Length: 491
Image (cartoon, rainbow, N blue to C red; front, side, top):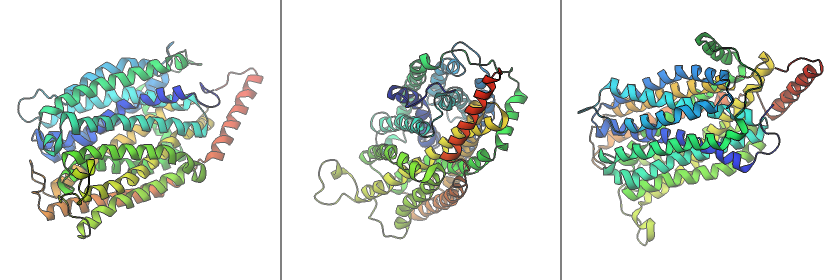
């Protein structure tokens, strides 16, 4: 039985979504700034940095099943999930601040970066896995689950974009600011405060609803059980199909996020004003997604919507780069069109046109990710029907396992793209030779197109639609009522 029946209160949607701000802060930092900070600012080799970050993700991925299983088996008067949120918030905030304030003299080494990156990611998982595992417990409704994911993505993106905007305007203003060490320290400290407020604030806001003893005391935790449940999850056909599509989507996301600042600075040669406009465009795309994804799900369902989002997104993001390489794009680095006034007077025609493509490309990309993430909630009931038990934490830990391994692979791929393109360390905007830029672009686009097609192929084959889900809920409810009538304890 879910915590809420019928429409969800607006306050609950906001409070639950607010918890994802911490994930957005982490995602923005790791994906957009950490590689360029440790590579171009602190002087570490790009391949070494990407290898350390990828290794941290893989280590974290193997910890997630343990955290998910522990969350499922937590038995307290505050429920299964809240104790994790309260316990992990402060250590996570402190570790995040240390990540951006390395105390190592000189250039950090592989093991120093790996150690702090693993610490941050494990503590973030101790918050995020229990938080997102609350979602299928809060409601069983097919559309309301999508609504909760919309709010989680909205707040997650807001957290990341706020940090990005502050990075470009306050902490590391201008393209040159991204290549200076000083602002990253304050970037880390402010992000730590935002992470703590997000995790604890969301937990307190949901406390009254979810803080009670679970209906049934779970069996004790064992390492073997934790990983056997993940293996069991992959035996679920729907989860296996999701995993194949999600794997490609997450690799693409990790690669795109980590290469973004390289493209913005060295290919599009964005000025300080234009870099500020970048997160604004991303935010507008998130707002547009908020109103688009619901109607798309109602018309095509989650599976087809995810496939459509993957294909349309990669077409839109590839177009500007292909036109640039073909010489059909407005001159990069040129002054704005004559007669431009206000903020547009400081923005290149090239950048404005690129932002137009980015607006819709990112919107469809998020539509794909929301559709895929929302599918997991339906798998929970499919597993319950087959096994007789619920395992939200294990399934979301399995999702995080896939996401982190894939995102780590995406960051690693970016490091190899930068290395293969032979971009010099400490490069200045406007000085990078065209063959270097062309190599970077073609390698990135080739991987993006291949991953998008693979993701669309598998996500479109997800076997649980609205009718299947509602029929399954009715069957589970009927079985539970029959057990009660027979004097048995429902599963």
